[in-house]
Length: 445
Image (cartoon, rainbow, N blue to C red; front, side):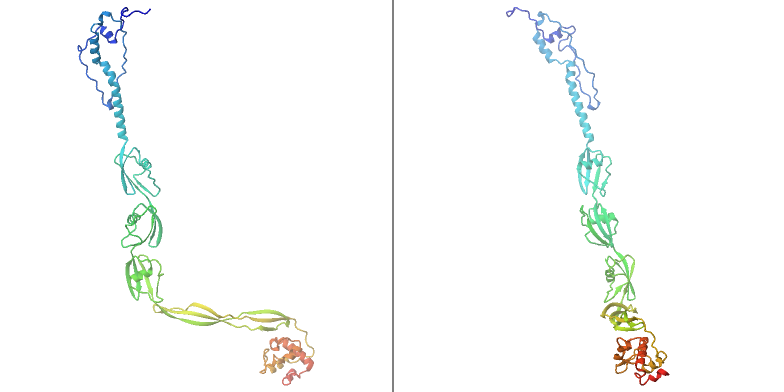
């Protein structure tokens, strides 16, 4: 049942009153002040054992002890006990130690290095362990012809200096010889020094201070060389970076005139220590006409007796005009040299018919006569003989009409001696020795 106010016992007891009621409790100000706890340095902090705090059971206090309760409560709230101080400072000390240790590790991993890429330096802070990691962080790519110093696998420490030099292709023509080379030099002069090219007194197609881009460049270098020139009985030695022998000769003060030349090709590259002789050439040209022999083509003719040859088309020699050079080199006459040839007239071939017809049977009544004596008397024994009038021809001086009536073809003087004798025997059978009024008597000796 609900009790009216002021009719029930007051049983409320604050917790600090329970402590005051215990045996051995000392009021505020009766104990010695404890030394303030100071956390050890972070790097040597040793954590204390965990503190197990338990509260003893507090007996209910008597009603008569309520006097002075408020004053004691105020003193208790303002007093700090050692256990309470420890519990409050311990978490703070742990946080301080964690932050101090993390900061020390962070600072220890950071490295200040200087990275120079193709001559452009910059200072960096990095956590990379080696040079390769640093280049990867900075996006610096290197190839087979690039140089990294120190090498990519080198461990990094603070204060290190790393240099990257990019390779550049150089298409070098050195004293006429072509080379494809790589260099990390950024100028022509640096490249020549790296490649070991002696540039003193040399000709270069570009300036020594010319910068070389990543794409490279083409470079023509002609070093200074000693060349000896022999001319007109004298020897002259010059140092020159000439590109040709002709230029080296001119550098020696010697002029080539007309057909003058040198012992080596004038357009060739002069080598160091080379001796060049100048050849003074004088001379003229001579034109000669030479005949060109004609060819002979033989064809078989079944209408002609064997042993008979008839010229169907007479051949004609051709004509060639040759031009010769007559030279003297340093006063010594040289062998003529044909320098030009032209055909003035082509030769015409000769066509000869060759008889293939079998010879006839012997002529009875005429074979025993002296036909050789008759031929000697009529034509001097010449099968192709022709009288001054052109009417009679051959061994036996046939006229064309008589010859053809006896079975001959063409002209008698074109037939063979055998065929002419055969036709003469047939004529004798027909007419006796009358066709040869002056020499017919020779037939009978």
